[in-house]
Image (cartoon, rainbow, N blue to C red; front, side, top):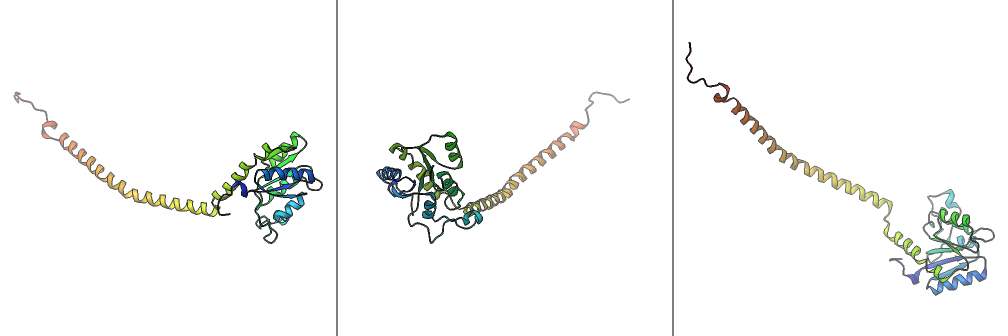
Length: 222
């Protein structure tokens, strides 16, 4: 996308093994004008994102296969915590360990208010932890996370550009210091000459005949 997406362009991937819960979250998201894709498992979510396991073994390679990646960019993932096979927490870890997907905000849902579970998900990188049933007021809290991620993607310059900019700034600063050095030396030279002249004048005054020999007027030499 050429510019930061508007709210109607935000695309949310909803993950829940319960059909009823998927329909509920889909309706809430569409009420908020989001585009929605729903899947019933964490593995299908990863498949939709084009994730492959080689990302953990070869971190320098992209974790999303160009041939498998969905046409529409995903701006946020909201997933149930308790699911058979891959849990929402497992899905969260996979996303955050991926070099290509880690910047996608992830929100966890659960019908159980377990403090250790909530803390563990937030520490792993989840943006929010919603208790079911999810309300429209909860969905309204998603937008800032998507806006933040979009803004960050568009504002952060590549690392190479930052390094090149720093080198240019250092070069300019060094050149400015070199240009200022002769000017400072030129200013110091007249001051040194003036100081030398003053010392010479003071020395001459100190050695004047009137000062180095006292006058003895009115005395008779025997």
